Length: 94
Image: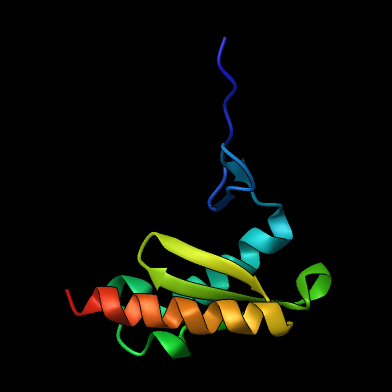
């Protein structure tokens, strides 16, 4: 028997993918449609989407057409975003 999970967006907290709850999924999809990351990763720093409700202190960084990173808006999240931006810009050059 197999477990079937249907969702638009998934998170990977450990080793397997889990569907996002409806609120988070809707906010991720809104940002995805606004920034159109499938058109490329130019100006990746502007493809950040602030979340609301229970995810108030989180941002989403749309890295490419199939990946988005959920980050906190605290000091640790800001440092992680800076490192991620360097990585994304480095990888986009190749």
